[in-house]
Image (cartoon, rainbow, N blue to C red; front, side, top):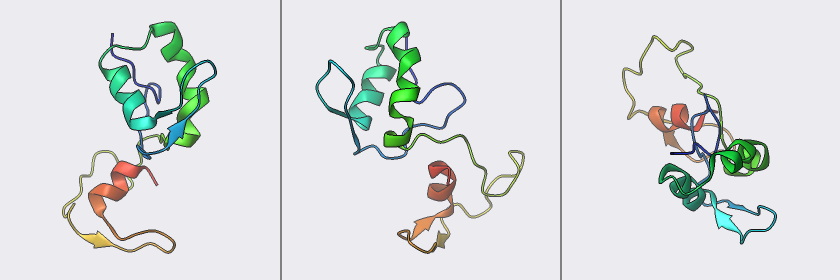
Length: 99
């Protein structure tokens, strides 16, 4: 059974290179933990506990439509935007990040 390590109704790992330390386990990157979960390598009981342990470290975010409404789609997802304190990114990358 696949496991969304971020929990239901969450976008997914926003910081794949971050390292999480789960008690009793070797440190693992969020990307590798997510892959393990999607491949069914995490027991459902353990999966249910993960969001509280990893969401902040892995950058799990609820969906955040940059247009302000789920029913409106990006007209130019490849447009480059600049935000103070952030690297330049496309509109699609901004929406995916959940910022």
